[in-house]
Length: 164
Image (cartoon, rainbow, N blue to C red; front, side):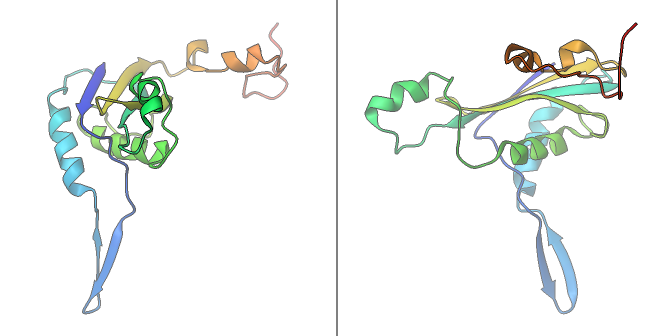
């Protein structure tokens, strides 16, 4: 399943606390944005049940207005990695929270695929959800780059794993 959410990607913010007359209240500063994202996600709601979902994200971040003219084309290419705040983990947290209860049934079984931030002229969040099996498969392990670097490591979590 592919989901596209238009607009600037929204990071999760820390909860705010206030104390009035001895009563402590908690406030989510991103509640409004979460509500808007959840409304968009309702359109994608299906009867498909994901046993072990693998979720990947592409965050297309807006190009800052302070970019030099000679660098504009590189920023517009859509392949330049975004290296400023917000952190990718804070972006992922908010969108996983929004997916919970609409597309996903709890996020305890979710495994993350690639999560990337790039500059784009069209800010949006793209989400891919794939169903996986209970047992991990080789395509879920993104260790191809380690093999290319010549690292000679076992990728099994079992100690002293020796296939017969």
